[in-house]
Length: 343
Image: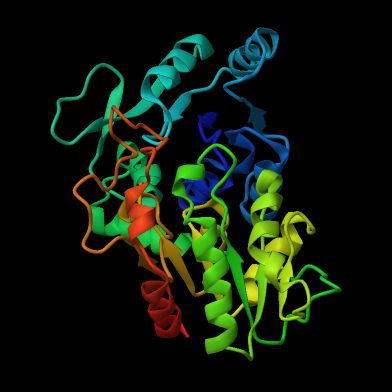
């Protein structure tokens, strides 16, 4: 019995699929479960932290060439999958097209709770958080209640017994905050304004002088971290660490920090799955859908704006509005209060 589970997202979304992956492997065995990813970073994370077999990854990106997409479809057809699982976090229209092209025997796809299932839609989508949405296909194989699904997710979400990767230039035993201001190259609308982050570093230095502050970033976020840390070049308690570490080292630094402070981003899910206390700043996106599953306090505009969240709207989609009022109205007083509460 061979299953393919679609998950070609960024790292944060892959993290939220961990309980679902563990269910499938418990049910069908590691060699029978295949998973789609969009890059090597996600593949490496899943190989190291889930029972997925290293040979069972299929690569797919929306911006692949026609030749690469044809090759991907040929791979799907070659495996002759019995089940093609399309979670609600994958575009339904595109996912169903891939199912038809794959020639898999059975599609397991969601339908909204307020609608009737169409052909090949076999489970209800009624949870709000993505961790639970990703796991809900279990209803096709098991007669599980909502409570049973939640219990399974809670037991299988965390990473336990993580090997500590060697990090030579950071003392992991000292007190330090980790601040991650980025939110990916294509989703800059989710960022707390850079000038507010810069001012907040100054506030932390005054209110918590015993803590070092490491400002992290990945990919093209180096310019952002440089802007934030520029006023503190002569302060050895503030350090820019963007793009300086492997994923394993990065996770080790997050896991050992006293508090992880961030925007809505992939690394905040890494912090969540490792039980690191954190504070996240939310605005355009819905904390109850995409926020860290556990261990976080959120900061957002108060009072909450009527347009929040906007990421699901037809008008703004996943880009936010030009003025980003929700992020402008959130403030460092709230952020400091949340930090103090978590400490």
